[in-house]
Image 1 (spheres, rainbow, N blue to C red):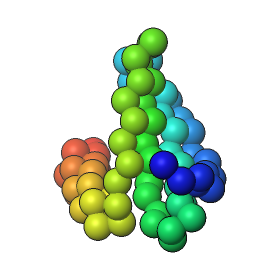
Image 2 (cartoon, rainbow, N blue to C red):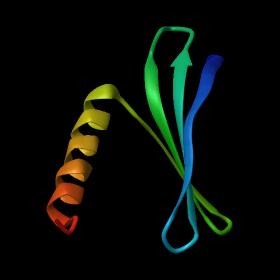
Image 3 (cartoon, helix red, strand yellow):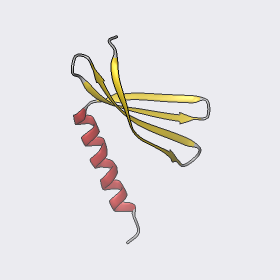
Image 4 (spheres, rainbow, N blue to C red):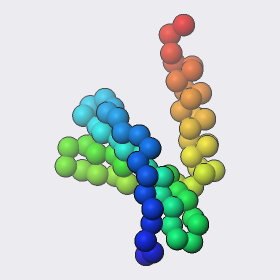
Length: 71
């Protein structure tokens, strides 16, 4: 695997003791991915997603939040 440039975008806590980190990962080839790190106690889940997936996921989460937020 080639070297990558990693920039931390955000870090925050979620319910039930979860911590999330979002990183912008750019490889020497020019490929850019959004890295999502979720920590639950000693367990880690790491996902690298592309721009199209990030847009789809982000809009689905915003739609859900808009629908469930009290007026």
